[in-house]
Image (tube, rainbow, N blue to C red; front, side, top):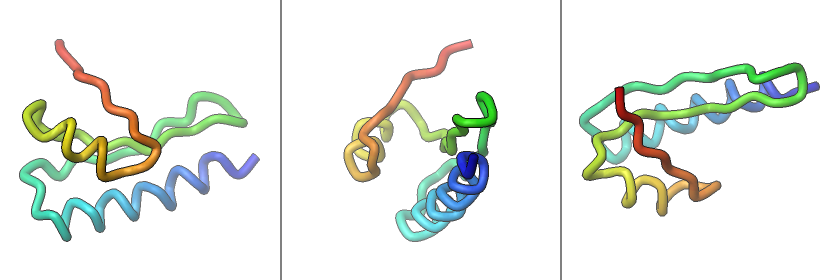
Length: 66
């Protein structure tokens, strides 16, 4: 039941990571999937995805195309 609050907390850490690493894009957010599942995410340039993915846990990265 704390999934949304945990995602909000992780979003804060993603913003801190962006500032510390001086990442070009500053796009983060949270998404509530349902009452028991929420995610925090950040958007990076594709060229930086592997580096950022490997630095953060869990090690998950997806390429988004429109």
